[in-house]
Length: 99
Image (cartoon, rainbow, N blue to C red; front, side):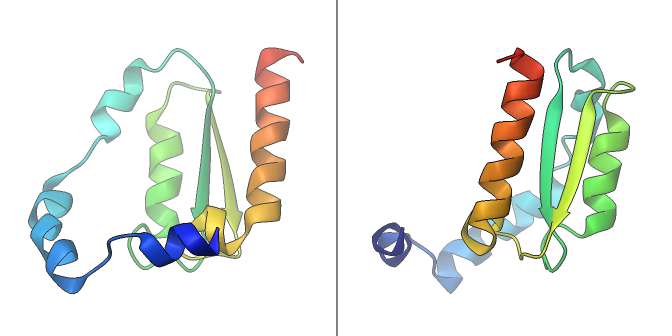
């Protein structure tokens, strides 16, 4: 994990390049056509996606398809809270697949 993080591209120039597009991006309208359960993991300390937006994502899904978990993490939930995130993913996958 540390090796992958050390080699990721994360520079101010790269982030600034994508910021205008990210500010305009809103995928919530497309969520209304979801047909399968959706797990939303969000960090309570995420500076990019506030918890209110994570809640709106779940609310945009058809009734009963969204499941939200707020973790003690920033934007990189899998890095900040790997045990909790993986546990929730495995539980969700077992529940929706019946395995």
